[in-house]
Figure 1 (cartoon, rainbow, N blue to C red):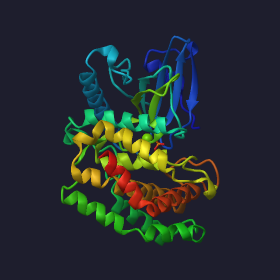
Figure 2: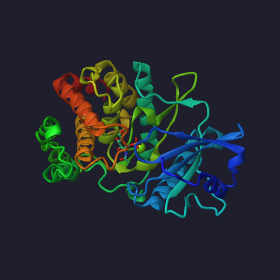
Figure 3: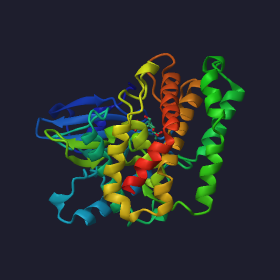
Figure 4: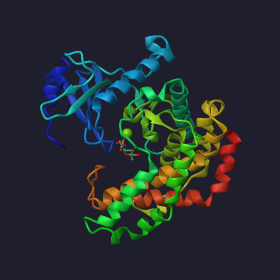
Length: 360
Ligand code: GN1
Ligand code: MG
């Protein structure tokens, strides 16, 4: 972990470091996160926004404020809104820029909550997906043009695949040979990029404000039940499509192991979990999606698996500069894992499409 002057940052928010316990929260691959416990009285979630990835942190904060206003309006009374508030510092700003050019943000910590890395049961999958469905229902009233793309072309599959091809051509770390199977798997699917572009350019799939990082562990559940509270990790709430959000749920819910599990035997596409998440998402949203959106949800799962796998592979070939890694070949393991899941999905495509249509 880099050396940050956390006491100084907390001071900007009127908190004395002596009066609190700070612990690192090591889940995301991009930002640095800390839980700040103030003498057991209240808790905050302090984050350094990685400005090499989010190049417009101010725009990101503006999105977040806009998002909070929308949720506040939706839930009405203050106490009914489960979404954590973003705190102002002593200069009345919603972020703090430190001497090293780091952007910091502090939010309330959602107490008595938990998250799941794995969908252990179908009920968890159904409720997790329903939480993203309820999020989407509110976002459907938001104007996508009012939200800054916090990462331009984040889910532009065509560009992601070009970046991969570029990394293969350069092979700057001489790792191409080690990843030859994964490379050919990805190159066999270059057409997915063109297919997505044509759907978007025909306006067949509408642009909405979407979450864009719908991992299961971005849903907060109550501590003592499997009722969801809200969804978190809102930095990529921006213009997108429901194909991405549904797709990223399929990617992160269906496997019984995490995305970096290196043992290929353990990566299994669980159809019952797929069905539960589809049911949960569409139980909330079915009436407000277009026919084309519903028909292309499975395609959304395919593009997200390919895209994240390709991003891990690109990062592996480029020497692991983007995603945090903890071991050798970590990004290659992640890529392999995602491609195994995609292959299994492709083998069951007809059945899976029928399941979607049952709830659509
Ligand atoms: C990153 O940092 P985290 O874990 O929330 C990434 C997502 C990937 C995910 C893979 C901004 O999310 O796109 O799906 O890792 N976020 C960014 O686990 O690149
Ligand atoms: Mg995220």
